Length: 395
Image (tube, rainbow, N blue to C red):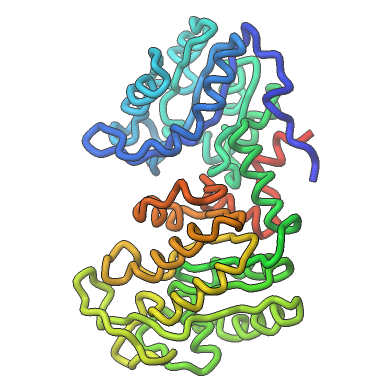
């Protein structure tokens, strides 16, 4: 892989820096309910300001239509919250590349911060439009990408903007790329991956990539039922991707050829319906009754997975073991989260939004070696794919 152009290489004194951040945070009644993504950007923010630069931040928020301003997706509350985090005023402009934005950027002094309005209010952002990107680049002297979570998107503020301005990787993006790429080769053994989530089809590339390096892959979540049915087990009303049955069997065989053991659950917690208050039942084995659906791995599986994880020196985890949002079906995910946290000798990496949400829910986020900020981006990197936003700032 080519080398990333690092932010630390650039002389920033008296320059205006345009930095793409991921401030796509949850907002409830005008207040930020979780500022984890904003906290992650502070290292770069303080570094840039300390180097005597003026900082222009740009981000998206939610999924607006792309046809102009929508109040529920405005970044104004984010600017107010950011001011409290940095301990200094944050200028906000309800514009992106227009006259107001140009004026605000031109008046910005060293040590000051300006937050532009939601990038996705302009259709040019998602279209990776050249004119939009050129206008965005014209606001500053230097561009920094510190938004790893959107670097798998070929959007204007991530990719095309780098055609018109000196561009660098932020510290967060550097850490993400270096850490996740190491998980494909430079790891201590035994190396164990834990994969969950809903669909096998979403994880085929990840499984195929990891089996070349891992000693074992533990599979839970609804995706395991496609494997179970392919092996001839009764799965009841559980989510199964019928069109992926043959591929699932092929992956099991492929894993053996690489010396990787794919380990499936040996019992389940199931219910009649996908409902929060549904009555949970524990299976005696790997079969699920015809009128039931599996919603979590069972206690024997949790113990089995924990035993394997306890012997690992390197751990990668993506995807919950069950519907952890429902307390009755959260125990499998909790057990895996705790087992990884308990293994203090292992280097543990957590990737994916649901897994990160789970460890936050269980108050274990500080027990892991590295928590990735990217969902789709981290998975594509683990698959071995080149991310457009990363490629754009490589030397």
